[in-house]
Amino acid sequence: MFVTCSSTAMASRSLVLSLLVLMTAPTADGQALCNIANRLAQFFPRAFSNRVTTLCRAWTSEAITTHSFSGVGIQSSVRGGVGENLLPVYSQTPQVCRSPVVRKEVRTLTDAEWRRFVNAVIQLKRTPQGQSNAYDEFAIIHNATTAPQAHFTAMFLPWHREYLFRFENALRQIDCSIAIPYWDVTLDAPLPEGRDSILWTDYYYGSSVGPVTSGPFRNWRIPPEVVQWVADTGVERGENFNYGDILYRTLGTQGGGFFPNDIVQEIFRARRFRELTWAVDPLLEAVHAGPHVFTGGHHAILLSASFDPIFWIYHSFIDCLWEEWRQNYQQADPETDYVTLDSELASDQELAPYARANAPMLPFGPPLRNSDGLRNIYTQRYYRCARRPTCSANSLDCGSSYLFCDTRSYSCVSQIQQGGNCTGFEGNSRACFSSVCCNGVCSASCGPPPREPAPAPGTDCDRTGCKINARDDYNRQRTSNNRPPTFMDHIRRLDNFVSNLERRIF
Ligand SMILES: [Cu+2]
Image 1 (tube, rainbow, N blue to C red):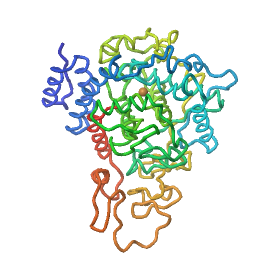
Image 2: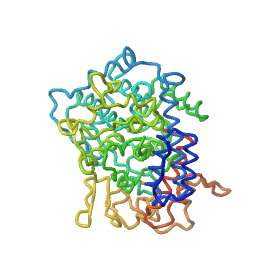
Image 3: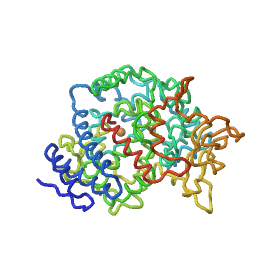
């Protein structure tokens, strides 16, 4: 079957490209590629569209290999193995808890709320369950064998909704008041360097590079079998993933960063559920992978991602974005607007049967079916999402002392930690946490200008001179001095993350 690309913006170059793709990929892939390329081509440079196309191919083949039941994969079967215990236990909110709870942006939580969430997560990790602990029992089912429909199929969003719902219920057995906060990464996107966000401090997420040895999740244990799977995945990809048995992150060393709100608006152009699925338009799932890869380490690898507690906070955001879309943009009944064609359920046809509406939602069902994941009951009875932080000329309050209003665009932005790069925010007295933005650096005070120009953050200097590291070089490309990042800056970041994704796919 032939797939046509209609947009004139694509021109003959892309037609040639699509034909090349069609020669090597199944029809469904070709269709998906045409769709995404058409949507992106209007404002993305040629190179980016080409890379997206390559990404789509690479990713699809990854889906095919990772979901395989043989080879490197998950040995436990959930039934009678790791993960079995939690499945019935956490399918309902404890009777004594009042619902709905409100999932809020993580920086808008009060200190007490954040502490209660962290404590409950830690307690889950300390609760023996089966052969391991309650936290690990949850984390281990996030893989292509136990949950074949969870990624690269139409079930991506509903499956993760149920997954988070159960995790939240587990936390609520410890503390009824808890709702999983969400991490709106678009608030970090405008920062010159994502790693300088207030989130990468000991108060919030802790260490951002290397083993996590500070913050609430310090020395977070990764079980031996996962250590092995991660190392094996590295061998498969020709990379070194020997992260050891402590939670590991590599923030900022790969991937282009956090996606901006423009991308969210692009996703919100969809009107029917089928347009949010990988086989029809991979945009949402592909963009969601960006922060996974950017944070790196365990969070960047599918079978270990949920071992990092930031997984739940990040996926809570993806879920809340879906909810925002359901309530404001979906032009059909959200409970019944699903996908019927196998070719649209999954690009890899082997996965399609797992994603059909009536199929059991593995590993949670039967009796739970995939179609149950579309029910309104989740967000009507059990939780809802607070509005994402916004500000305006009339109200500069972003609802948190850790956020500030960027008065150039009247949008909320994460505060920058002391010592962080605040280039472009010099005029904003609230941009830096407990400090002021001087000469592009969040400093204790603005003293007289230094006699010699200080080395740019991230440069490697010794007596013989300064060696510029890759990340610094990358930042130089992205933003020239003292101007707010433009949309094209964001695109360049995305371009970077896609090129990294080609080599290392979440
Ligand atoms: Cu996932």
